[in-house]
Length: 213
Image (cartoon, rainbow, N blue to C red; front, top):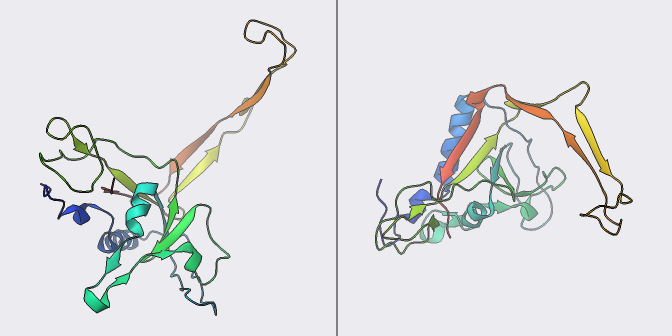
């Protein structure tokens, strides 16, 4: 699909309320299990209850667009994203959790993957806000940002047992050599081995979007 050069269609390629609602609907049809329970209300001012939800993993770029999302027009317009500090009860917040929208609680990951230059071609003369890689008019392509839904019980990690599961490495600083001429540098490290297994692939979901630069 083509993208307007003036940026007027950029919102259609970013994260949106309707996009997340469609993702939740698909996971529900596939009988995916939600990760969290209801966050109940609080007497504190300006707090919100949070419905039983799926987790979604996002990067900083998608989070920036998420924070600005609204729904409705004119006097009905409202922000649809609830930041984590406005939860009614903050007792069960996941590490890295940043907020909530329509039965999804978002976790920001510093290691979130970005597929740089893997999207559609950037049209000549483009002046919009979507992030891209390359030079417009030659090789520019839009960047792609995945939103991952790791639903409850759809996957597992398996620790590998037996001899050699953990391998320890050490080197005494007393060993003087070319790389350690003063006998002051040593190290201690270890390697761990494990595997991941997908149990129910239909209950996992990746949604790909553009994001503001």
